[in-house]
Length: 371
Image 1 (cartoon, rainbow, N blue to C red):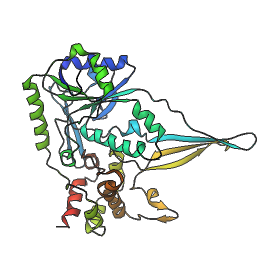
Image 2: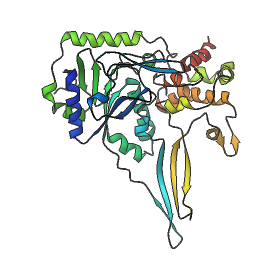
Image 3: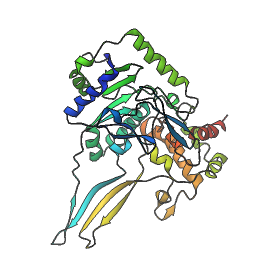
């Protein structure tokens, strides 16, 4: 099997292909309808997948509807990305225990994550995984818990053919094509899928089901190209291009921050659904006899009061300063830290904002003051 070979599998071949992963010891997680949204859930049977389901998204709005389509991936995204599988909302970092002689011992956790194959990863979410890898794995102090979870994942990306009105991944360069760094990359067509392995492990497992693979026709390749172009043209929102650091930091006193603060509830929904956010807090849970203390890391948000409280001083005392911190870090200083913006264009922050704040509109408004 050549490294860049693309194959076609019929629609009925997807489930047997997934069973190959089950035989290799993976739990298969994929998109499913839950709580009136598309979420990543354990997939036990083919009917668990969201056949015929579509989403409608706009500022502060998410709604599913169903038709007779045979497609399983005719939706943009749900509130959940890959982040919870790699960076759990609550995680034990270490425990300390007082011994009989009064000394303390520190006990690191030894997580043994389950092997998980995630089906339906979007291009925006693959880009977010790459960013989280940079943060947790490529710094001088690697996060061992994250590393174990990352190595246990098998990612099956699917090109996005039905972007939502809130999507803008084409402008950030992260979609709608799913990219080449997943283990398997799929493009869903009307009668099946184009599939290509992106890793050695992906090629090894695809070879196990070689009987399902066909060489794609030119018509099938053309359908995928046309579908991709349509998905790009369907996106009406776009972030200003390039490194926005200088523009944003030149407008720290922009009246736009106060205008958005008058709408913003500081609930933190935007940071909870963002696939790249990694802010956290650390807390202790101590036993009643104070002999054992567990040290936890939990998700936090730059919209919380506690996150801006440093050395007895509140550095971000109001909502305007917290929203400014979020946007200037995400679109500005991430370039210095990670060589690119922290936004992958999924649009979740806009969809799941209860006040209907449009992240792209705010960014464009601030940057427009420079013209």
